[in-house]
Image (cartoon, rainbow, N blue to C red; front, top):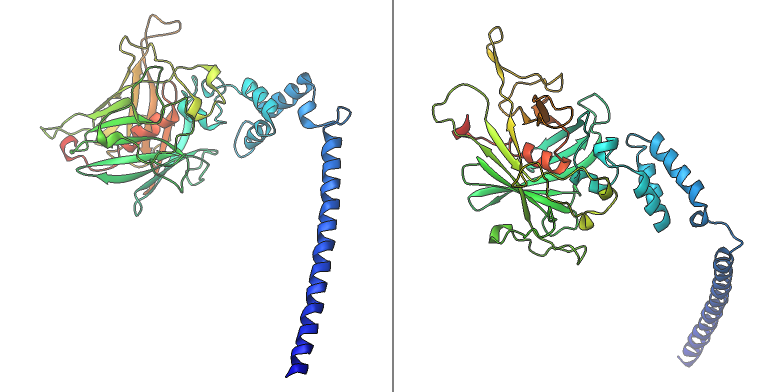
Length: 378
């Protein structure tokens, strides 16, 4: 027994010495690596060395300007976002060059979803519905095909809250909750599902107060910036008119909204720092939209609206919202402009085309009100 113990002791001491030597070698090698890394850091920080952040402002601006002009659609549009992610200097110049969607018609940063759409042409989007999970996904259409998914923009999920429903809207398709950093707003309905209130996670203008009711508070919310209060701020309503006589025709709706101004200075700012001024469209700060009245087609025996090929399936959910143009404004003719149109193209696929004065967030919230049965309005 003593010989066996002695053999085990010598074997253990040998293995311990080998382990100790290997640890010392690794430590010496790690020190050498640290020295080499520090040498590289010192050399890169020297004035004689060249780096991306030390480029001339004229050259840097020309590079970003060419990237912004050439990459006009997704997925190539991500190169503009990549330029803004290089460093703070690149980000500031990219924000100066990348124009707002109302002028350029391009969606680049998440803040573009809270800014008005283009002036002369609509943004064409698709909404995909998942009935099993009561989830809705908004995509920016990249082609004319209705089967292509496109660029993901927003996601919403329907929750039952007491006697009414709520739609939580998020930037993250996998994290749809009010406590998420990706939370951008919500839509709340009444008992009958005919009146809806749109809430924004950020104040629509300076001095706006969040909703004080218990149902509109954000529990366990992760406030991104202490300068912007986290909460739910009412930015609009959607009301469907009752159809007590059961007359034939589509749903009738009216939408008073606080629309964001077409201000280029807001482009590129994160959602937590985006502060919008109160719109001056009316004295009360609200823009009123209503559904466009369809016409009765005698041959087809149905109500018809011209969706310009963007709607292929007849449905009571299909609608167009218009706002009367002020004749006193330059170029105003007093006609009606379609600010939003929504229609069905498949079992769970819908088109959503919006333009000024609506933002993608507001247009998506309005379209969500069309889902669900409204017996009192049909």
